[in-house]
Length: 228
Ligand SMILES: Cc1cc2nc3c(=O)[nH]c(=O)nc-3n(C[C@H](O)[C@H](O)[C@H](O)COP(=O)(O)O)c2cc1C
Image (cartoon, rainbow, N blue to C red; front, side, top):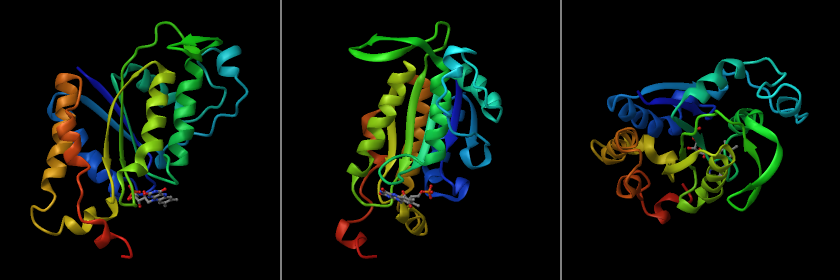
């Protein structure tokens, strides 16, 4: 059975706009037979990496900080798919999600660096499962390019872990989702596409571009959005 660990980095948790896209996506994965666990960074006690490299040089794979990462790390290492969900915050992910990702990745590295696909990297330790990484995000601003840096960073996260980046569900002008949900049927296609993307990923191992394009489609013209 496909195991999925999803982390939602929005401080608004299940009341936020990120959750409006993440929920049908995870539902689709469950419908396709996946075992899905969802965590909120706001509920987890995970301190930032302290940068002393003990987890690489002294106690390989183990951080000296004792917090919720002891519970989460084994689940992440058993998973086939990591879903990182976040609103765009100052063109990137939320701080707690970045802290969490640092804490996942650094203990997985070997002390020495080597060239991996032409980049100097701490190669990952042997015996660590390799899976797939997906980003789910929404932004306040209108344009799709608000996600460029975040998507770039998520690809880099996958590269650092030697996992495979499989795509992003992005929802520009996410702040209008809730008001548009009051218009019957107006944006059902977006939620259906998010669910379909979840099914596709579990069933086929990838998501169709056409499906992801529906999730990010324009909801209203920019001149109706700005100034509101
Ligand atoms: C601290 C902060 C920084 C933000 N920075 C950006 C940004 O750089 N670009 C953008 O499009 N939206 C930005 N936003 C807007 C959020 O992405 C938007 O409100 C989103 O819908 C929130 O998702 P949520 O309800 O899941 O928390 C920012 C919001 C906050 C609170």
